[in-house]
Each structure stands twice: as structure tokens, then as C-alpha cells.
Image 1: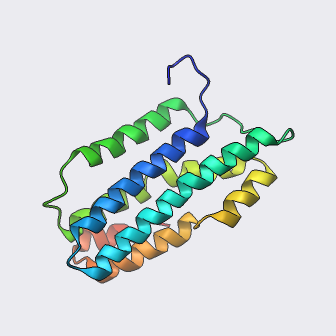
Image 2: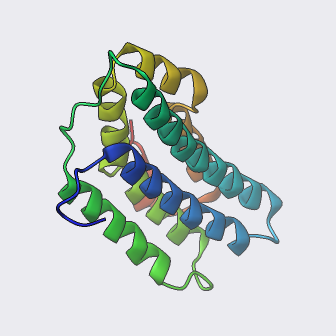
Length: 168
């Protein structure tokens, strides 16, 4: 995509959701010998992949509705910043990450602007798009609650445990 093409946030943020899912899939592979942790990260990754699919579905819906258009209030710059941050996580090796490291990264991701942007996309798409996104997806709030519960169960780092309380 060149800078001269119009910015379409739905496919760009679908790509970002897929990057998050890749990070979580990697975490699931780190903990193959711990089935509960492995399954938790696998489920988190699937939820993120589902978010990406929903964004693509909404893109198709918007293209087919004459009465709805996405308001372009979300910038290309913000999308690029988030993508680069996630690519940085992916570029680092994960073989030596400990449980706390994985949760720390997930907490940084989930408390970033990604969910705020996802919510903004929900608001900007109009009633058909909002209803579709709400009906098809795992709400971000549910996913954050799962993260909080897993963090409390598997993580012993008091700093991370304090930080998770600020995750809404």
C-alpha cells in the first residue's frame, strides 16, 4: 500500500489483529508442556483471529450497503505505529520467555490502543456494522477478563498483578 492510496482502516486493523494472534500462538507453543497455559494462549490467539475475520466481514458489508460508510477518523499513522510495535514483538525470539514475560507482553498489547481503535471502528461503521461486529465477536472486555483471570492464576510477579487491575 502506498501513501497515495486511500486509507481503509478495516483491512489494516484486521492485519493488526492477525499479528496479535501470531504472538499469542507463539506463546501457546512456548508452554506445550503446560496444557492449561498452552490452551489459554491458543484460545486468546483464536479470539484475535476471529476479530480479524470480523473486520474483513464488516469491510464486505460496508461495501454492500449504500447507506453506511466507515468514517475515516482513524489514521494511517496510528495503524502503522501499532503494526510496527507488534512486528517488534514478533521479531524477538520467544524461546526463552518465561510465563511472566508472556503475560507482560499480552498486558501491553491488550492495554494498548488496539481495543480503543476496535471500539472506534464499531462506533464509526453505522448500525448494520455495529450489530454485525457485536454479534459475531468475542467482546474485547470478555477477552480481557480471561487474561486477568489467567494472570492471577499463573503469574507471580507483583508488578504485573498490580498492572492488570488497571485493565478495564
